[in-house]
Length: 297
Ligand SMILES: NC(=O)c1ccc[n+]([C@@H]2O[C@H](COP(=O)([O-])OP(=O)(O)OC[C@H]3O[C@@H](n4cnc5c(N)ncnc54)[C@H](OP(=O)(O)O)[C@@H]3O)[C@@H](O)[C@H]2O)c1
Image 1 (cartoon, protein in one colour):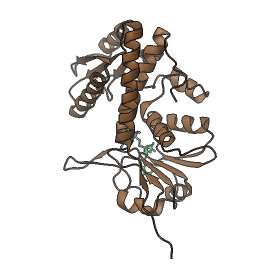
Image 2: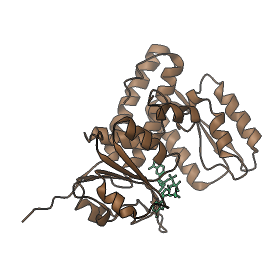
Image 3: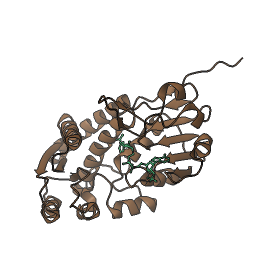
Image 4: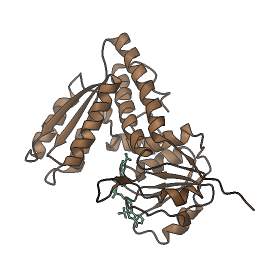
């Protein structure tokens, strides 16, 4: 009779706290060395309540780590030209090393234009085509999207090597799936990407040594989707009607089959914010020609 073990839970909150601690120490060292600290500008257009919460969390994280943060808010009626002019000003502001425009912007604002307006060296979200292109060319000494970077850091922390492994990613968005594909193939994983047009997604998922799910659907990944002993990373954040948060993965049943698993919340989410802080620090170092940014990963 075989004894079934439950999966190891990958504690994203604790791993993110470690990363934040090391960023805090480095910010303090750099302050002593240069007399300056990294600066992040958060730009919020309109009054979407969820966006306000996200921006607040990012500003609070800056405060805790000794990073200067500037909150810039524009009314929902602000034009695209006004927003682009603001970004242009921040691009040439020496106190600001990173610019984050909270998405989604109002409907009348072209998202692509906003992404392209942020100077690539201040693009702490890692969305600019220059940074995405470099990443796909195998150059990771650029600013890389925070959530996929957080996934890689979780795996590294847990000593889960991706080289030669079957990695299945359920998501093809520009902020999660696509940059994660690049990070995975740069590390020699064999990658399959699934999306809403994929035929028989379960068959793909069941082959995965590492399954990354970001569909944004509660209960989407059951034990039946998971190979015995696989690593399961739940990127999704789904808000239930009662206000509570969950992910794609049925945690309790999948835990009985997986080898390692992230909870949601408490997995990838905290890593995303920690990686944003790390990108702000990296942008500061690149712009000031100090510190060792090649050793960040
Ligand atoms: N933890 C964090 O910090 C963090 C950061 C970013 C995002 N997220 C979460 O991650 C999730 C995805 O975010 P996103 O911005 O990438 O959203 P998105 O653009 O809506 O992407 C969802 C992806 O899932 C695919 N999908 C949806 N239903 C599917 C189905 N039935 N079968 C197969 N694939 C399916 C979609 O396919 P199509 O492309 O064909 O539509 C799409 O590629 C959300 O829950 C979001 O809250 C979390």
